[in-house]
Length: 288
Image (cartoon, rainbow, N blue to C red; front, side):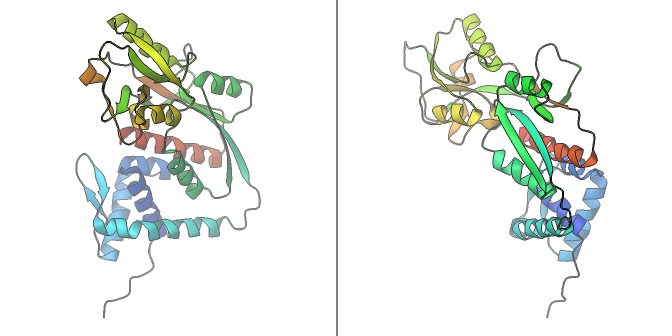
């Protein structure tokens, strides 16, 4: 008969969940406000206690082992139950109003919200998704606690750069241009700085184009690409399944990358921790 496993170290289980979600010891350490070596030690002890290898580590990648994938759901439930128990006597809810640029929000939004909820179940998140200019205007007018946007012109030193977003020409895997026809585009409209950069690059390269679909949000613009209607101007990270970067194959000009910047005046620990969870999750997704 196998010996029963002793009570698990909740901090180690929490570290495992964050490493699994973010596929990175470094980013998990940032969220948990600790060091990479401390995370590694906790996970080694957890694996020894369970007698199972939970993660496969390579110089470039961290991924779940087969046994780690089996353990993840139970680990997530354990961490969630612990967080709810700890906060059960906390009657005051904290509302955090966040504006996020629609150019950088894709299908990963449910995962981002889940991570924030796991971090602080009593945090009420009010999220506004709009163009970077609209988000910044709302932030400057005091309507938002924080803004996560593409770098606005003229504000180089006023925000914290979180990561660099790379943009591409995204189309359905089997999409082919029609000979003699202008390149059909799916964009976020004339007010979008990325759209402006894209059409400027096409004009400079002498490539004819026409706008056939305009939508708000990466998910909407990407849907037109996935449906085979157009080539979408999107961050690579937000490209939907069934699509690919057709820029090299069509000899399209490269699109400029752009910094994603956080603006916030929040200084209480709870809010800072919540924002660190959100921005670290974005960093993880941008590197995936």
